[in-house]
Amino acid sequence: MKLYYSQGACSLSPHIVMHEAGLAFEAIPAPTKTHQLPDGTDFYTINPLGYVPYLTLDDGRSLHEGPAIVQYLADLVPEKKLAPANGTFERYKLQEWLTFIGTELHKSFSPLFNPAAPAETKEQSKQSLAKRLAWVDSELAGKDYLLGDQFTVADAYLFTVTNWARIVKVDISTYANLLAYRTRVSERPGVQAAMRAEGLLK
Image (cartoon, rainbow, N blue to C red; front, top):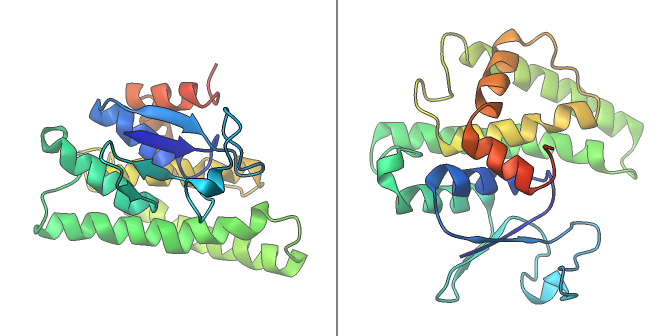
């Protein structure tokens, strides 16, 4: 398998899951600014959408949406319990979290990275994020991870997205549960391995 990623982008989520799952893969940098791979290949010739994450399988098939990719990876190694079993209520709770993180958090951060976005738009995004993150903080009360005691692929996604708060100056200092959670996740060997591979940890 090949995972195309950009440093610190949402592709860090499946990168973490790869390490947590113990799967063999090749990580290939596909910078979002240049779309040029290390060998000079135009990334658009591989993924016409041009964004990451992008996963290619050894048989030529591919997946290009983070929540789909991480569930696929989790299902390759069910013994790791990175996702509840398909068909269970808990699996739908996982999908609920993946959808929420993608639509309510990830997309709210996006304008803050866009230099062309109007100040008013950025302020609205920050206000929306404040409400959503406060709710996440309340949901984490008394839990180690989003689904309870077990780390799942949703945690890899939430950790990745909340990493961006410092970069775009979104204050999360008042969310005690979220801060404790982020510390807990950051200490996992799989998380550290992925971050080190992307140059995010020395």
